[in-house]
Length: 167
Image 1 (cartoon, helix red, strand yellow):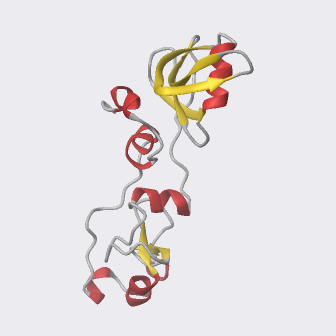
Image 2 (spheres, one colour):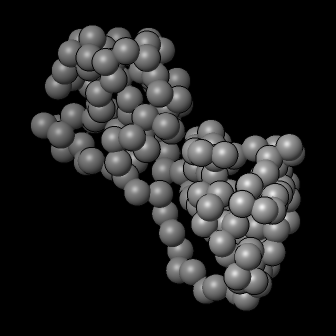
């Protein structure tokens, strides 16, 4: 169960966060949440009892959460881009590349940063993509929080799908 994550739903069944199995179990045990789905064949063992390990929990009372975006970090850009260079698909020596170089007025933003291996980043240098004959396979974008959980986090399980698919 170490490393496994649990999807937390608000009282209205909207995904709001993830947490560890231990924290989710504690919320259920303290009656602050209810277990919606459990891990098949997953158990939390105490000295004299065994409990089903949660996979999805729902808070018993609604929590008003202001809009949360995904933080712009190096690791989150790598996750969005599948942990590979967008130009050559290499997974080695990844760096960040500004599509429009900063020297040409490019910003450090979700829509201007991509994962690139050191070789491709050096090849592109301070030039535009057109200048060096390189192309992007897709337009860089800012993922929503739930989209990030669903598509890029790779820490969920099949029980999460029904709560994350229509977002």
